[in-house]
Length: 322
Ligand SMILES: O=P(O)(O)OC[C@H]1O[C@@H](O)[C@H](O)[C@@H](O)[C@@H]1O
Image 1 (spheres, rainbow, N blue to C red):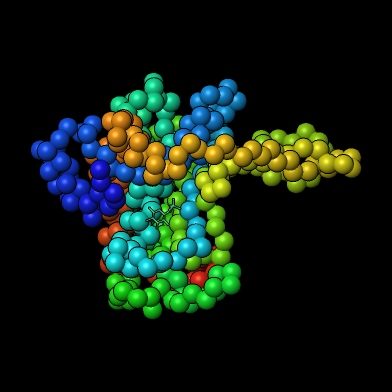
Image 2: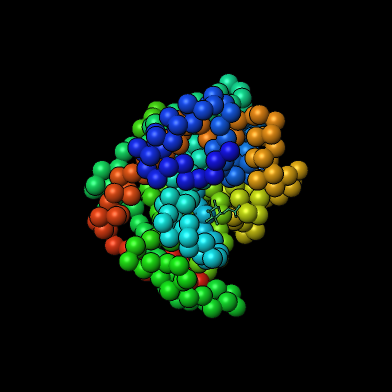
């Protein structure tokens, strides 16, 4: 069993994979991503594929954007030894958020067996358009938190935390806008965002549908585009629709909401059980790990060469405002 990071970059991940391949077969390697064992995450596939109403709309003709967000109030929490060498991009985006993207964007797999599921996730990673230097400037943002207050807690600046080397300029906030080159998704924007020491927890996948093509009501009431949200913590699901209002010729927002049943096991428990029973379906295959590095490497290169600013945001705020 291996916990992330699976290498520090693509070449490193390839070396690690070769080393592992010399020792054991791939299906005996468990690269852990506990996000895949969250019940909501599995539920993304359930909602898509066990229903009639969504999958026909699950493409760029109907979906304008998908926001995959892991904003947390948690700060460094004494993890400088690991985190200061990683940063938000390697800690969250290269693994957890790209895996969530895979589940949202994948083609329906033939089965949820390890091969079908992981082949289809790999397809998604391979369709992510490579970042050019201009894309890094236009489509990525990074930030680092300053001192502030979160709830009733005073939080020191990241750079002043024990064990942090301020000169490394490690980011605690990362945002990437991705495009997928495929028939299904060309034209939909996928935004991945994560940050520490933010004012509120927001962990969700929000699927934003396009506006309706025509309103035949003869008045200009506001119709907000539909949004389907998979909440990751707490684990729930909401669908924002538009209904008619109480007065004539008005619209009103309608929200359908459901709480997910609590899972039998916490995510790490599920991951351990899968390893003990020898089921690698929810573990990251070597080629997925490599492909995820391929996606983030140009961003890492641009950021370490300081081609974009490292914005600062007060702890307890909504993140950097450029
Ligand atoms: O809330 P969970 O399940 O611990 O997941 C979030 C955490 O996931 C971990 O993998 C990251 O290293 C942390 O930085 C992050 O806070």
